[in-house]
Amino acid sequence: MYRVDSEVGALREVILHRPGLELKRLTPGNKDRLLFDDVLWVARAQEEHDRFAALLRERGVTVHLFGQLLRSTLEIPEARKYVLDRIFDDRVYGPLAIDALRNCFDAMDPDTLTDHLVGGITKREVLDRIPEPRSIAFHVLEPDEFVLEPLPNHLYTRDTSAWLYGGVAINSMRKKARMRETVHYEAVYRWHRLFAGASYAVWSAGSVNGPATTEGGDMLVLGDGAVLIGLSERTTPQGVERLARQLFAGGEVDRIVALRMPQARAFMHLDTVLTMVDPETFTQYAGLGMLPAYTIRPGDTEKELHLTDHPAQDMHRAIAEALGLPSIRVLTPEQDVHSAEREQWDDGCNTLAISPGVVVTYERTVTTNRFLRRHGIEVLDIPGGELGRGRGGPRCMSCPVARDPA
Image (cartoon, rainbow, N blue to C red; front, side, top):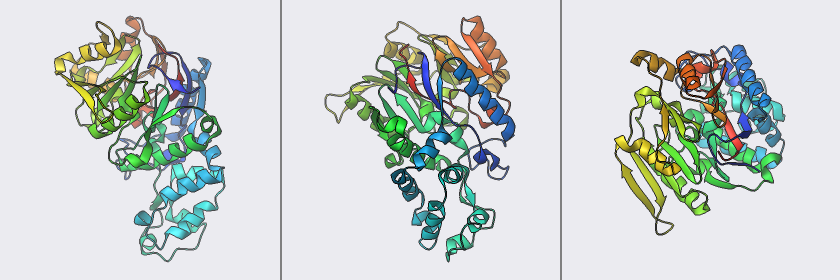
């Protein structure tokens, strides 16, 4: 049964995505457009990711690799049609190229199709398969320009779908470079044999939400019907409002605490600055400070929500109340402002709990790891010299689909 009842309960099953062709397509010229700050050494990144997956398996976690899930899904004709119908839009590719491009992709076997849906395809690669379409839009492309851009952010499986108690939010993504990811997850959850016969709710129906965006890196499952959400540069208030109505109507969530975050890349998602490490403990980036908070509860009718404002100084108190605790413990290493900023850049706060008080981190965040250990947290560190260049840590790279209560 797929459900996630906490941030820190025993992790049972998780989706990861092993980096591949899509990261080999990153260049100094396109990395910013594709939301990366650096170009990764892909072979080393794969080694590091394999170590991450092996560590989880050693701890009894079942690891599902997203590339394999998508390949199996694309073997199903209805799923293949669904994905290609949503990608090949004449408003994007022009009406004169659309049939030829669609036929090109239709002719691919599932392995090749998966590689190009995730890794992208250039004009030159298209012309290796089909004659040039009589299309202005296609003709003006340079030979090595992308007809379909790569999706290197598939590495961060946390964001595009997020399991909240007995259901999944398939998220509408904020940035253009990630929008196609949603279509892949919609198909996997609808048709893959692991999920097609399972019983679970869908809290957010993906791309139909349009600009009302939510991303899983901003969502923390506090437990016992509570959710913590960051209002970040990627998760909008209107997206949270739509999600809250779905969650409350489902009956499994009765309170959400939303934090108003700085709208900056350094605070891209809530889990880059704040994560949970045991049932009453969080690790928080020193530079985050205290944020205005809002407690959202069901209103008197389905069309209403009840909102309570909390001043910034009461942020931790609002989270504690949602957890039903008198207070929470917040661990922030004492270090100078420059060291703290470096550790946050290296995802020091982006911990993945695999059981209460046991977390996975990057080994490079030495100060944070030492501080957590000193406060009784078991830290399992993994190499992240290359993976860390993507500005996402172990939590970003993992989408739990089955986790116990804390």
